[in-house]
Image (cartoon, rainbow, N blue to C red; front, side, top):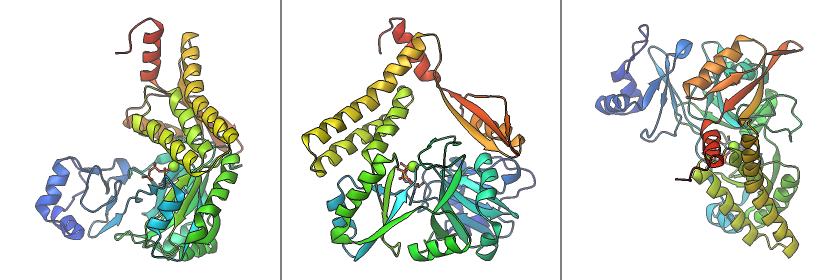
Length: 388
Ligand code: ATP
Ligand code: MG
């Protein structure tokens, strides 16, 4: 691993901080599982792959003399059947809190050398999210609570990953759903987190209710039906004390909308991603004693979400066009557009940037991600090649 000249990473000290033998930390570094960030963030390192007892995407900040850990957001497990999952997992508590699960992308925010920075799930510093977050969160929170990491969802149409218009957001916004202490990753309880967010004027995910565990599944099914009709994603069910692990559950319409997006790029989409969404429909259909008509409607929705985007792709490629995943971003500094492009290119993506347009004080620009694999595969099929 090559370090920036000014940065002297003290393996002994870091190992002590992480409570690891120095030889173990050296091994992690040699395997490429602790990686240094680039440019002005070169005192930030992220764990990649399996690090002992640390969530994926955990970040180590070298403060030259001391260290700080910004723990990755823990994976939230999914209920396939609400009733048995709630009974089994929340058996020891009286009630659960239900919060809306917003459909955007996960970002962690901390103050770094006097400026807020936003980490993605994998622990990269995202230039776009970092610029945007300055508008969404005030720094005074981080000065008053330097030991707390804010976790939230970036949602809205001007979104590089999931573009959603259903929230009535004009461009992009940030919704706090978790706060945890640095180093230990210990969460604040739901009440404390919601109160602090309110005090500092942060947007937060909607609180949809607190229910006694025996009644919760029925209440949640009602909520899910309503959210589904509005095209929202689903819920996260939490222990108010945040001791037991939260559970997620999503609407059929949201599963199908994921499939519809993914099957446009059928040759790029992960098999597990597609398959798991189909299986969810099987379990939901079983649990929700549906009428014959509702069941037919589910079959139609699921089938259409798989076939119609694929047929669209084939038609488009046949007509000589190439498919791409297009989105817009809006920034106040034009150079963030080019920094973000360079950032995407580091991940091996091929992107084309449009001409920036002025919207008030901001710049709005279209970005196209070219999906080479699906384009090539479709062309090959159209030319009569065989699947494999
Ligand atoms: P993972 O389960 O590892 O997070 P994933 O990318 O498949 O993987 P999702 O299915 O989107 O994740 O569900 C978890 C994510 O939901 C969280 O990482 C977070 O970004 C998002 N989220 C949105 N709203 C909430 C909320 N109210 N509470 C917790 N997480 C939320
Ligand atoms: Mg998500």
